Amino acid sequence: MQTIFDTIKKVAIKIDYAIKTEDLGYSDSSNSSGEEQLKLDVKSDYIIEEAFKDVAIVKALVSEEKEGVLALNPKGKYTVCYDPLDGSSLADVNLSVGSIFGIYEGELIGENLVASAYVVYGPRVELVIATKDSKPQHYRANGDLFNFISEITLDEKGKLNAPGGTQQNWSDYHKTFIDSLFQEGYRLRYSGGMVPDLHQILLKGGGIFSYPGTSDKPQGKLRQLFEVIPFAFIYEQAGGQAVNHEGLPLTRLIPSHPHDTSSCFFGSNYEINAMKSAYGIKS
Ligand code: AHG
Ligand code: MN
Ligand code: MN
Image (spheres, rainbow, N blue to C red):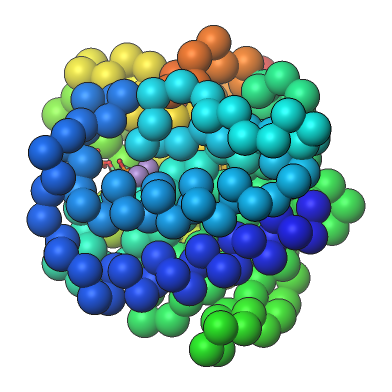
C-alpha cells in the first residue's frame, strides 16, 4: 500500500507542475459524464496512468476521464479509482483544484474501499491520506517531499456551510435546511471545488458540504467511486459522517457503473444529524 501512496506523492508533484505551466484550454473530447475535457484533465489522467502502470500491486484503474476499467497488472490486489483533476475549470481563474484517489480491494463497492487520499493544489500542495486504522494524515509538499503536519479530527459541530448545486433546482426541504443553518450563524464557504471545500471543513474543525439530488440532476452530480466514497471514508475516519439523502453512509454505496453519481452530505456529527432530521430520516 505504501507504494501506492508514494506514487500518489510523485504524481501530485507532476500534476502541480502541469497546472502551473501548461495550456488551460479545452481538448476536443468529452468524458463519460458528457463533460468537455480540458487539456489539463487529459494530461493529469495520463500522468497518473503512466505512474501506476509500474506498480505491481495495482490490478486496474478507474478514472473520471476514462470510459471503463483499465486492466493493469493481473497479479495486483488493488484497483485505484481516481478523479485526476477535480474542479479543473477553476484552474484558469487560479482557484484551488485537487486530485482524489479511492483504493479498493475486490469488487468496486464502498465497503471494499481500504484507503483514500486527496491532493489540494492551492497556494501550497497538500495531501491527505486515510487508512482504516488511523485518523487522516495531513501532509504538505516541500519541493518533492511531503512533510507530515498532523492528524485530522473533526469537532462535533462546526461553523461552515458549503451548499452545492444550483439553488433554483433544490427541493423545498433542502432549501429550508440550508437556510436553517445560515439562521444558526453558519458561514458560506463554497469555491466550486469539492477538494478545497471539503479540505477547509476538515481543517477548520467542521461544518457541512452538501450536493443533493436536484431537479436537473436527481441522482446528484458527484461520482461515487472516485469522488464520494473516498471523501466519505476520510470524513468517517476524522470522526464525522457522510451520508446520502436517505441517511445511508456513503461508504456503503454499491455503484452499478463506474460513473454512477450520488447525492452526498459530508460533515461533522451535529450538522449531519441536523440534515437527517430535516430530511425526515430517523437516526
Ligand atoms: P470535476 O471538475 O471533476 O468535473 O468536478 C467538479 C465538481 C466538484 O468539485 C464541485 O464540488 C462540483 O463539481 C461543483 O458543482 P456546481 O458548480 O454544480 O456546484
Ligand atoms: Mn470531479
Ligand atoms: Mn475531474
